[in-house]
Amino acid sequence: MVIHYKDKTFFTGKDLALSIIGGRWKISIIWCFIQQSPLRLSEIQKKLPDVNQRMLIRQLRELEDDKIITRFVYPVVPPKVEYQLSEIGRLLEPVVTSICDWGDNFSDLLEKNDNKTSVD
Image (cartoon, rainbow, N blue to C red; front, side):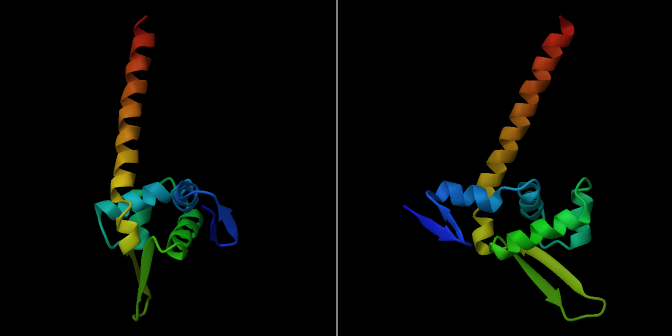
């Protein structure tokens, strides 16, 4: 099966999925929306203090372009913009939750291994 998307060729849906949600901050951004939605840019920044604003906006734009999130601009001055998961984006909840759970389990394993080596 060959998939063409955004001038790229993918040979499986898995490759396409990893291309869409791959990125240093995308899983973390999606996790924020799973926890609370909708969110404004400043709220996302508070939840992810290690990401700079330029990178965050870039990742949000990519997620929006891939239809994972929606962006709503309120017609007020100053502009008010909110982001939330789209319908297809909400389908990522079990995937992202599993990835985060795995990360917690792996972190626990690393901590146990560190404690064993520091005791010796």
